Length: 628
Image (cartoon, rainbow, N blue to C red; front, side):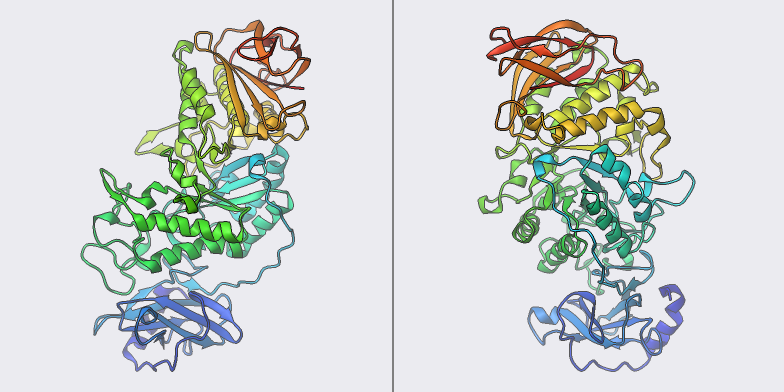
């Protein structure tokens, strides 16, 4: 029964005499936890004088059941709990609280793991699930991440949004592409028809349009069966603003006008960069506990292999729409707590910060005072590479900035950064401005042109050969240039039209992961940009881990329309160097090719501060990979 249809019985219950609970629940845990014989309910309501739980399990249905304080004084008195026998999975429920002689305040469960909708009722979730496929997280230096959105990844135009089950149907295609990690944009319940996911109303409950909790677990289990890790995007820097009146806002009836009660700041720190007053109050231990518990729920109960923390800068600072109120030390403590919990119990899983401030303290250890995240999105790399390929004139391409972005690392570790040329942030419409996907940015209205294909794949080549964890955004691999929104299904017809471009990405991924056994250096820490001609717009760099045949890799990139039949390049060792990858290969596109490329012998003398040299054929807007 939905709350709307339950109102008459709720009104009768509110006016009837309510029995007092004898004692609080003896079972630990927040929210609704199924235990032997029934369900334990617990909620934080520090300013309430009375708290009740009611639901479809009551007799009669939706009769109020009184809850007791966990303690007569101290922190325990802020929590209310009760054990209700006979409750089963799927039962609907709500909490009700009263201050003084005021009206009852009806709210959904902040810890609720399932809900009929963001404006319906919480549901008691079934914690049981049979995991079938053991999984070992790939080494971080061999990860290739594919960012996707559940609602649009495998969706039919004009139909309902995609689901966890429809996403599961696309896993074989992703495995064949070679990605070994998917990053799922936020899937927590939201109170809008569609969503990118960055307006969560219920943190623990998955959006019902995507599927119930077991559907998400099946997706994760099937991804693991294919060797694919699952990273979940979570949003802790703000909530909603849609739908918050049903749960978090003014939860127990207490608030300071015009603010929103116990879960949110009661002053200007509540305002977020998006203009809403919905930043959670990290200064309250109970709020930090809830967010920590949410992170651990995904990592432990749902067995996701990592989390991407959205906008950590808005957790550690009171960044607002038009100004910045300064540091939020308790927000920093929250990040450290989540990192310590994850690193202590499951150190192989990946915690990614989206801070975008090039701040190495995000990925410095908590022991040294850092936030303890394992990696972070590198906006500097994105900006340098994207700007270099979207410039209309070759002479305007800034290879010095590209070089600096290749060298960037945090705390001396190349894999403390995630690098990309497209992500959801840059391929959508923001504040009414169509940001456009990379092929369209290169040439608006001519995204399928030779120029757009050549330069966008040149950028992709840098993503997969630079030090860092490479990431691509859904559809990038088959040249989907349609501006993405949460209502824009991925155009899978493009995969047939641009099957060659997909093959290019597949080959890049294979060399990046060293699946052929001759490019291990692309998984290594080291890079030396030994040649940069900013006039000719040619760059060459050496990648290696331990060095030697099968490890040393030389990458040559031409950022101009000028081809070279014989361009002399340095090499770290004499002998034959084999051309493993050529982004100009005609097999990738019928109008590619026509320029001479070849294996080379590094029998020349020293050049470009390298001990040996050899000549290479270098087509326009092309990236080459050589190894021994």
